[in-house]
Length: 248
Image (cartoon, rainbow, N blue to C red):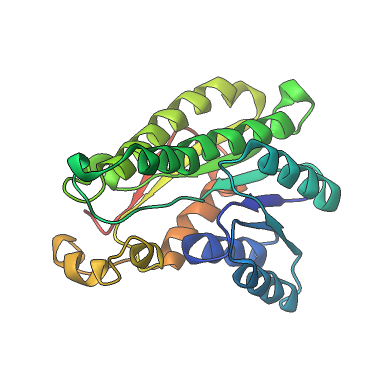
């Protein structure tokens, strides 16, 4: 059976590192992006240059019609999906709850939570033996913020990731007997562009003293955990939430 993985938010950061590592381990990779087409194309070029199979596919995961189209494009190009990495996510600038507006909350939950639900639904429809599939694996991206709360910075982001933890546990139990494994990875302070997008480009350097290992992590270190979880080496692992946080 072909190993086919869709990585949402796969054009940069943890998503790009995951796409590249999965390709090196023999996966055909669909690299999803919302806006950064050039970055997604570069990831695809790198994979193909190394002899792998990859495609770029545009979709805002918060938009159901775009998600449906994305999965149809992957079906047409590679066939039935065998793994999904729900990596697409956003943060916003540091604020207290009493400074935030509802538009921010809606976008945060639309992308971080509903986007993951939508993509997981479509993946289950393709992987589950209940739907004629041959099984598969879903890895959701949570965050250490789900445990720490994000006080004074982004409690809304933390809440969206806490919901991902609960969703991972529930879906894992729901589809375990149908050949689908569902796990999550909780990254901690990781050197990626997401901090700059939230207006804190120096966040890792400023907070790394709080990490027992005294440093931030890399996207590649998180990718190692994700790719292990989607693969056969983790064949008896489901409902796990794996911290990649340097001990924080």
